[in-house]
Image 1 (cartoon, rainbow, N blue to C red):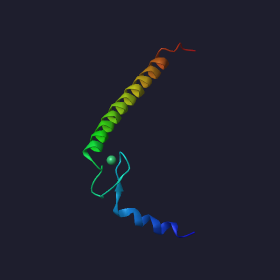
Image 2: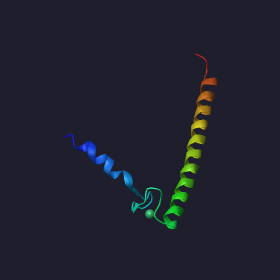
Image 3: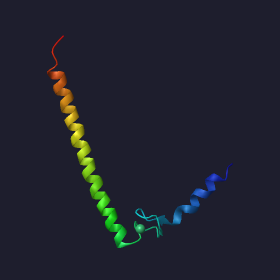
Image 4: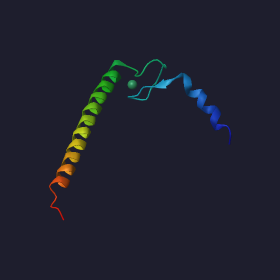
Length: 74
Ligand SMILES: [Zn+2]
C-alpha cells in the first residue's frame, strides 16, 4: 500500500512531447519542429478562444446590468 509514493520520483528525468506523447529529453517541450508548429497553432487557438470567452462573459454581464436597470419597478 505504501509503495505508490516511491514510483513518483522515478518519472522525473524524462518528459513526453506535449503534442504526440513521444518520450523526449527533460529540457525539450516537443519532439520535432513539426510538433512545435502544432503546439504554436494550438496555443494561438487557445488564446483566441480565451478572448472569445472573455467577450462573451463581458457581454453577459452588460446584459445582466441592463436587465436590472430597465426592469419595471415593482
Ligand atoms: Zn511530438
